[in-house]
Image 1 (tube, rainbow, N blue to C red):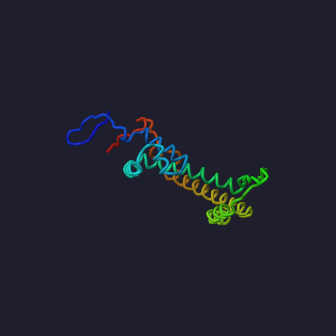
Image 2: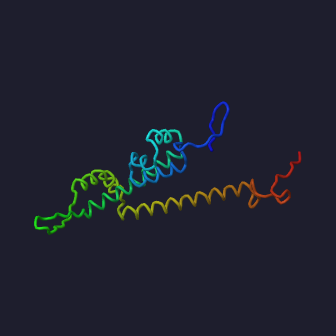
Length: 186
């Protein structure tokens, strides 16, 4: 049963074509496995119009869709990297019936991956810190922390002098009132 909104809300039997959480989950599982919306719609038995409509109006579904695409993209990238590094086996059957096996390495795939990640590598190489620089940075941080500690100690000593030694500070618990301010005598 489902609640139909309107001037007079009604309960009606759910139709097979209605959108359900189970349909959404099935669609998202196939989308995560294939990275293909058309295939996910076909296997999930939902129309493409319906899923795009729900993606537009349902924040949970939109976020889950993006997560599914992210998972599928990462899996696809790993498969392509594996093919680029390890190649694929190709079996050729000769006229005499014997087989010849060889590894094919898709150069175009490797070049595409290099192009995609070139900027990331340049940025990573530019951001590397030399060992000498690390020691210098560490020394500068230690000096700065020491200066901050001295400044805090000086401020604390100055505020103690203003209070008259070890008198309680504002916010300290007052012995008479259990933490509440004592009444003022006027």
